[in-house]
Length: 576
Image 1 (cartoon, rainbow, N blue to C red):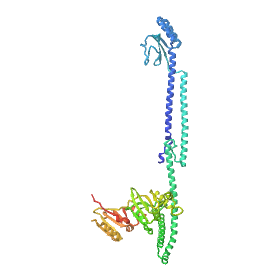
Image 2 (spheres, one colour; image 1 turned 90 degrees about the vertical axis):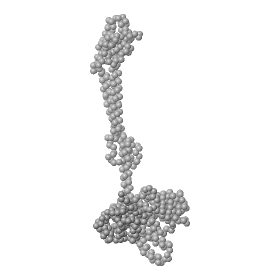
Image 3 (cartoon, one colour; image 1 turned 45 degrees about the vertical axis):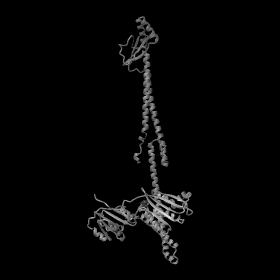
Image 4 (cartoon, rainbow, N blue to C red; image 1 turned 60 degrees about the vertical axis):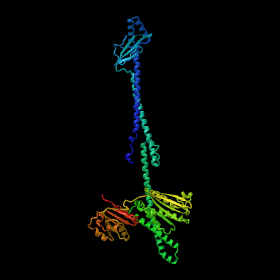
């Protein structure tokens, strides 16, 4: 999430303002409806009072005059009613057919009021003892000043009431918004200070802001940890280099006097073991110094923290076994053809050496076996180290993983450090152990195959094989491999003959196979034609050197580890 996605305040409260506007409109409609009903009710009361002026007594009196056919008395009565009620006209009629009254539901039982524009009529039926005698029709004209003072005051009060309600509602919204903002700003302050709980926010908008702050805070924390780790690694590198340098001096002195000691002592297994241990200490010190110099000569500390290389796991384990020939046990190594990983070699070698040494030291039974097995499982490599030692008691397994040593008093940091190391590189370490039977360590490491690696040489019938190799054994190997093909083959044991052959020649169908030392010399001598060779296969002994991997990565070359030379596949491709 970036800052451009943060909601703006004017949009943040749009829903609140919209709801408030809807509320005000509803309130206005309600007040209008009430005022309209009040107007109609008041108007009807006035009209009834003005036009429906004949009561039961007057109606009976008029009915009596009708029966007596006394028109004079009827006219006097109607005239008296007109003067009393101040209406425009009043008359007695037997029928209303000649009167134009629209939308007026007239019947002979109920008095009603009708109008024609501004002229209103009161229709009053005369019924005595269920006998109908006619209608008394009153008429009055009302102009636009129909509302009296009380009705005008009511309208004014209604408007004032509406204004007051809207004003109060506005201030209530402001108070609510202020409280809303304050509450959420306080919650954001808690988020900034370290809390990760966002459920107490009122809306998703503030949750988005809170999530953004949490993400930024976590990023800052990671950067701070990385900086601390960077400084820590820098200090470790310097201390390690200093210790390794200081160790070299006494080790060199011991190695100088070892021949005299051997001459004055009887040859024994212990003396051989001492010699092996001295060589191992010197090798470890040299490796640390070499690693420190490589990583600090032309590289920054940041690069040193990620100074990883592509290595073959089988080579690392084979070198550990080779460097520990003093182990008196049966080591069975069930390896895969090649298991590529991308790690810092010296770190992995230290961890695996410690784990294998632990397995060896645990061998107290008469059957002393260590089995090392590597298998590929999807994108992960599974490494199993299994021994027939005394095992780890079940109740001590958790303590051992946390750093407790069963070999001596104190901390056994090797196993707990190994667990943390494999976790950091995206793998894992698990232990299965039974007392007096043995221990199985199950390790997973992410597989990472370099783009420049190949175990296959593809060619066509037009391909020309050129082999530049100063090793007799390697040259012989390539001759035996290519003997099955009918392609043209050129073999060179030195640079001069090779340079003479490629000068002014077309090299578009050439596959060159050489070793890294000769290839480097070709680059140093700046032979222009070498860049015209489409495919170059380079055989190299120490695949772990970062310099080699960098050069190969930025070229059209493919690297073949010398340890996998015997497993190269030759495959012919047929042109369509």
